[in-house]
Length: 253
Image (cartoon, helix red, strand yellow):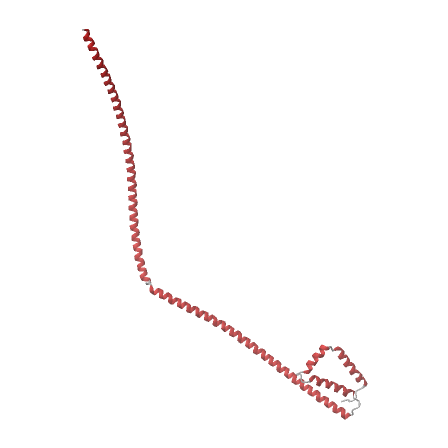
């Protein structure tokens, strides 16, 4: 390893560091610090010290070759420790990633289990509702069976129904006969009523004729009486005249 850097190297290193510092802004520096710090156990400080030691080692012209080799070995040891810390960080990141994947799988399994449990719960609810409905139907069937037992059977009901139908037919026939008789009597009554009206009209006409004859006879009797009375008056007057003439004649004799 070359312990005495040349003048060109010494000029190049500050210029590169200045350019890097100019390019980096505060956010990049903070991100770099967070990335380098690792677990937060001073990795950032170690790397900063390593860079300082490397710069001092590069610009230190007063050290002997042995001291320069010792400084290089110390730098290599620090670099090895940093690489080991970086490897540990990488393994830690891998472990954390694996744990995250494991937790993600566990989360998915738990979600699937929850979904399966919800589906089973829905199925159980549906089965419970179906069982309740079947139980309600059974209770309704029992109530209907009790009501059916309180009533006669279908055959007995059919026999009674046939008997009632026969009675209804018999009563219907009797009703038809009674209606026919009633219609016949109604017609006879109407005929009798019409005949009575005609007879009443004939009697009224005869009474009117008889009354007119009686009136005419009475008028004739009155007229005959008046004539007889006039004749009687004439006879009386003639008789009185005769009696007055006889004494006169006697005196004359």
